[in-house]
Image (cartoon, rainbow, N blue to C red; front, side, top):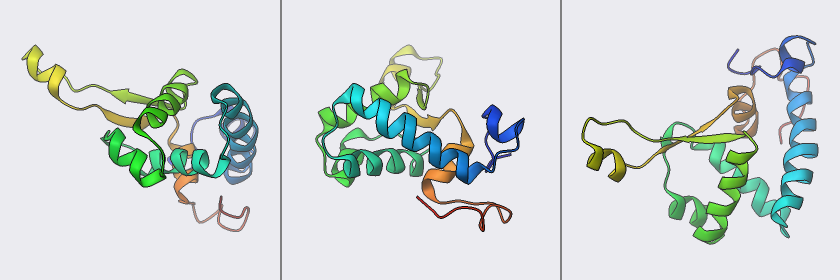
Length: 135
């Protein structure tokens, strides 16, 4: 289930996840989200999304993420906010009894669908390895 994700096409219609995620990424993320953000360099945006997937469940460090992608922190923040608004990613703020600590701790970055995150970083199930080339 981690590799397949929970999108209806991969669970109910038995579309092979590598094929579906490739099409999804190309049509929705690369075309639609790119137009919303007016992204000029698609390779930087693609790298940014893949780096976000590689950092799933880790503390979000926007400046480090931006530096690894060769973009500014401001650009990374804008790109991440669109990914969150389109339900690709979300940030989870830590919960503490002390409100001050809760506000000072860094959030963690997550993808709504584990299959998409796995596909973006190149993880495949043994069944899916022969079906589709990697991103």
